[in-house]
Image (cartoon, rainbow, N blue to C red; front, side, top):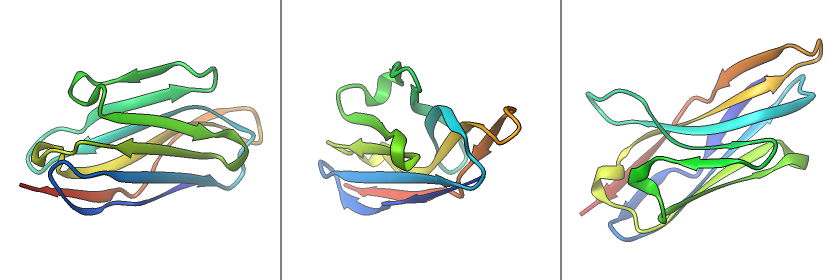
Length: 119
């Protein structure tokens, strides 16, 4: 399977962006999706995650600003980002726990999409 992200870009502080991540390949289902981000010189950190059962968790620094959602039929996950701040600037990566054809569960990362928030 592979994950392809889209939707990053440059936005002014207070603006919004919507990231998408689509999974393709030999996929039976996706157990859980996650969005992570990595700013220059910093470690990759979890932003939000959603399970197949609908359980959602957010990092404290994005609560009430970001919303994660998924389209099971399209094997796609979204991250709606509102009220963006300069400190949200980072490369955003999607991650998925994928049930593959032989019923094993494998973990995949997307290539990343740059989000830059100007002050």
